[in-house]
Length: 278
Image (cartoon, rainbow, N blue to C red; front, side):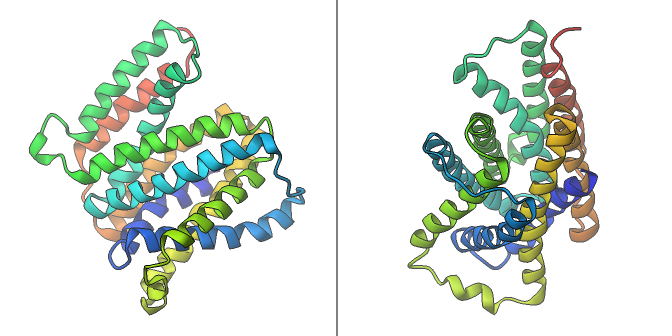
């Protein structure tokens, strides 16, 4: 699990490198192509029959749409902000937005302690996004918020989809549908531009598609089945640490104090949200 979190954390620096030379539509298309290809040996490895039940189609289509949005927003966020900030803001705000969406969409009942956690989390978000300092708040951080909301929607759909199909099959179908949709979106774009890029670009692209998505996601799914979703999810909080560390050493990004402080406040809030009572 620690390896999977490191791979996810490093993915933000890889994405930052990719934004330097290729547009969001083309890059997102090729990310899904590589993800699709990477899942083929994984399907053989887990020996799970590939099936698509009718009841699972709506969840796959919804997740594919939100996945495309997430990758667009993450790309734009990293392009105009920093890789480390993206790894912290999206990873930590996503559970908070998931909690909020569950209130309105799933109509779930929550305790007063969980509502307190939500309030604290929002305060942590304000600190982390530096909203109180409007001249320092840039469009990149706004895109990170949209990416976090998109991921929260994906999380809710994934929870529902587990009743109808295997997690790996679910991820494979999402990659397939997203790839096909983006193929038509990019018909008027020069998708072959990636073959003109240097070795640094290709290392980042292959890392992101194979290690940062397919392999890390598979490790997480397998570990979730063995450890339980609660224990497995707790490892997610290593992603911001790895994201900041990799961005610092690889891209020489400055580690901002307000990102660290806001992240700690929001992590405490997530602890309260996941705690039923004192």
